[in-house]
Length: 134
Image 1 (cartoon, rainbow, N blue to C red):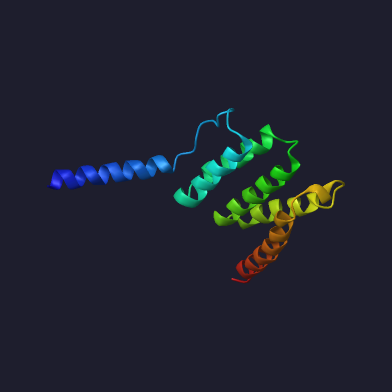
Image 2 (cartoon, rainbow, N blue to C red; image 1 turned 120 degrees about the horizontal axis):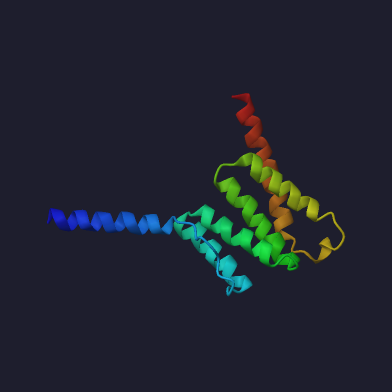
């Protein structure tokens, strides 16, 4: 019985560790939608933010001309850094994304990344101010 419980514990730990690994590379055969699906799966079901970041960053590198989806990926990247607790990096990335909406052609971009980025900039600024006061 103890051996069975120990074996089950080892398998559970190994399965959890496997979920936390970051892929060494992202297959080039993925569709744009699959990058987002795999990133969201890694982040939401496994809390593997590093793997999710790899999917989004790889998407941005491989599809730089897909400006709408790149803006969405950039939002997700900034949000993942926020979830990881890296407020300074997250704030910087959100501000860069907002600046992107001031450039020519920005009217073709989806609005939700801009709206949410602006809201999170305020939240992060407040959090950073509280940290400074401590």
